[in-house]
Length: 612
Image 1 (cartoon, rainbow, N blue to C red):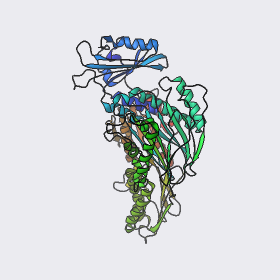
Image 2: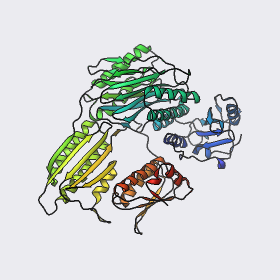
Image 3: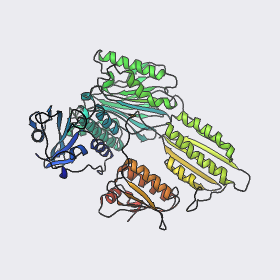
Image 4: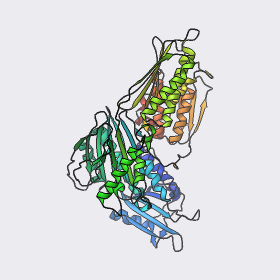
C-alpha cells in the first residue's frame, strides 16, 4: 500500500460533533504520524503524516502497508517496534481496527525515538497522551448554589499505562446533575479516543432520558457495537443538589466514597455487574442514597486504588484517609479551595514513583448552608460604588466562583452602577439605586441594577460614551435593558468551574483574519481563513465592537472562511440573540452551497439570521 502525500485528505473538524472536532484537533498536531485508513486507502491523516514521503516505511523488516492490510483483513490489532529500514532509529507502529461507514478500517500511528529533528518518525513525548486526554475531558463543570464540584485527571507514570480514564458532570435542570466516572479499555491515544466516544454516548443518552437505567442500557448497547469501548467500566448517578437524593448504578466500576460531615467515610453499596457490553442482556441495578448537607461524594477511577504494595481494601482505606485529611483542611470546601479538591485527593494517593495507572477523580460536596440572595439599596452616586464592589465581591466569593468569572461579573456590575450614577439623574438630585444578585437551582447567576432615572441610548459613534453596554456584553452571557419608571439592567451568567488542567497546555494561535469595514451604512465584520476556538472569541469581540455592544446593526461576511468551528457557531448564535433582543436581525454573508452556509443552516441559525 502506497500513499501519496499530496493526495492525503486534510484534517477537518466540520463534522457537527464537537467531541470529534476536539479529538481531531488534538491528533492534528501530534508529533507522531497518524492515519485513519479505510478499505480504499487513507481517509484522514494528520500534519505529520501528510509531511512524510509517498510510501509507508519498513519497520523491523516488515512493511507497514502489510500490517495495515493484515488488520483490515483480520480485525485484530498489530504492534511492531524496531529499526526504521535497516539502520534507522527505533520506530514504533501501532495499528488498531476501526469500523468506518463504508466498511472495516484501521487507525495507524507511526513514531520513533525522539533525537531531535533527525528522527523522521518521532514518538510522541510522554505528555502527548495527557494533552489529548485533557482536551477531551469537560472544559468546565457546572456550579450549583447547593453543590461544589471538582474534577481532576492525572496520567500514569508510564506512558504505556496512560489514557482512558474520564469523568463528567452534566447539568440536567431543576437542580439535578449527572455525575459520571469511567475507564475505557486500553491505553494511549486509542484509549483516549474510546473514552471520547463513550463520554459522547453518555451525554447523548443522559439528555434524552437521564435515569440510571436508561443511560446504562444505552451505554451497554453502544459498547456492544464498538470494539474499543466494550469492556469499559462506568459509574453513573443523578444527584438532586437541593434534596441530596442520589440515584445511581455502575458497571464493573469501584463504588464511590462518601465522607460525612463528621469525617467518617463509607462506600456506597453497589451491586456487582459486568463492564459495558460484555454480557448482553445484563440489567442495570439502581440504588439510592441521600447525601447529607455538608457531606462529600468522591467518584474515582481504578487508578486511585491501584497499589502494587497493598491489597484493594488497604488501598481504599488509604484513599479514605487522604480524603478525610483534604476535606478537613481549613477552607477546603469554601470559595476557591473547592477547585483543587479532586487534584489534592489524587495527589494524596500518588506514590513516589508516580501513579501506577491513570487517576480520575470527581468530587461533589453538598453545601451545609444555602446562600441567601444579595440586595443593596443605596444612592446613585460615585461614592457608593466602592461599597457595591466590596459587598458584591464577598457574596460572589462565597459562591465559590473562579477568579476570572468573579472579576468579570464585578466589572460588568460596576459599569451598570457607574452608568446609573453618572447618567440616570443628570441635572437633578441623585436618586435611589438598587443592586440584587441571586443564583437559581441550575447555577444561573442574575444580577440586576435598577434606578428611577432615564436611559439614553448611545450614539452610532459614541467615542468614549456607550462603552459600558459593550463591556458588559463582553463579560457576561446576557444583558437586558428595561425602561419602565426608570432603567433596569439585568446581567446573567451561567456559573461554571474550570477543572484542574495542565498548566503547560496553551491553545494554538488564531488562524483567521478579521477586519471591520465601516465605509457603508452598516459596519461589516469580514472574516477570512479558518475560524477555530480562539478566532471565534476574537470574532465575538469584533462583532460587539462594531455593533456598539449589540445596540446597532452589523453584518458578518464569511465568504472567505474555510473552516467554521462549533465555537464560531456559538458566537453567531449569541450575537443573533442579542440582535433579536434589540429588535434587529444579524445579516450573514455565506455562499449558498458552501460548507460554512451548510454549518449555519444545520445549526438552526436560518431563522435567527438573514443569510445572503
